[in-house]
Length: 437
Ligand SMILES: *Cc1c(COP(=O)(O)O)cnc(C)c1O
Ligand code: SF4
Image 1 (cartoon, rainbow, N blue to C red):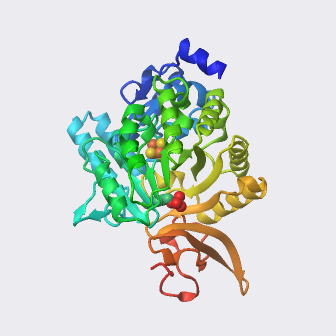
Image 2: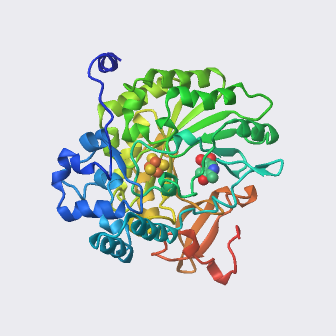
Image 3: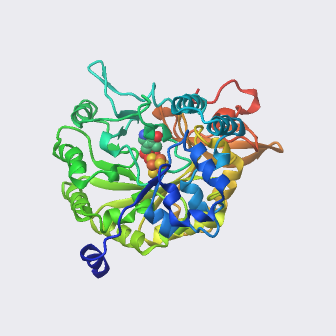
């Protein structure tokens, strides 16, 4: 606490944002070659790019860039585009194409990268009195997703983000709600919904006063089934000062306390990708403050090739999380969008990594579920490889389903060591369909 007071009264670490317009001013950028810097500009035409001074100064090991995992979490690299896409854009840039020409080429490439996977734009849209409610998604009975318009950005963008189209200006692809009233009416009409997950982007980029404008009506609402408010965030990993020394940090914590005092459970769904993200003093202090507010922290991450595809690393993360009082929650499979070809890990290998990591942590860290694909039908967990009559099969189940009845019915798929997504699997024994089809 003393440390925090000192920080608040004295030198407040300044949030310096970097994007494609000013990343060349980062002092450490001299660790990269001219070609690598150019690749950042090319890839950033397609995927959003933004980072900040904490990531640059405290997380990235510049001696190891560009192979450093924390560098790769944030900085675009040539291989994140398919070679043909990269060449198309690089050629246009070399022959000094106009911004409009480059924009059209980038937009065409984006359309080839499945910008809205898992039926987000057509199947999850709730309606009330015949009207679609913008900025809400409702897929699983108990939980409604809410995308406040002020929270549709992040302190730093992940190169593997599956919501990457949210951060591209003026593309008609954004999911966002400008007001909370439709959500309140929707909850009243659907008393089986017990949870609202406020998500983005990162809702904790919002000023505390703005966040309160969204939260207060939820706390005051009655006559619905709301018990838990979840907030999805990566601020603990990419800007922990959000909870320590930002001008409104104390207000954020006070707001958390207010939610808890109102009798609702507050769950912070924290996104972490690498054990290094737990090693700084600020992140540890921020976790302690959040837990002291009465909120709980659940942790999740995708399993990422080139970044964290190593069981020892996952075991280290889960141990750190558990000992800091966080609850390990999901290991996700990289979704079928964006740079999946670069980050994806085959399902069989993902299961081996999960299993080896799980075997080496205490029961209190075995709260984690994985590896899980957040797919169109629901959340599909790879249970493992089993043998039937001497032949290997993949055993899977849904832990969440678009239809509740699909949940926890194990099923088998033909073994495929290379498949990276559920749509590449075939039902076992020549069956025509999986149970969820
Ligand atoms: C993952 C997800 C949820 C939350 O699922 P839990 O298993 O309860 O964490 C809710 N809605 C959608 C659309 C999701 O993808
Ligand atoms: S913090 Fe989350 S929403 Fe933001 S870029 Fe990373 S993965 Fe995407």
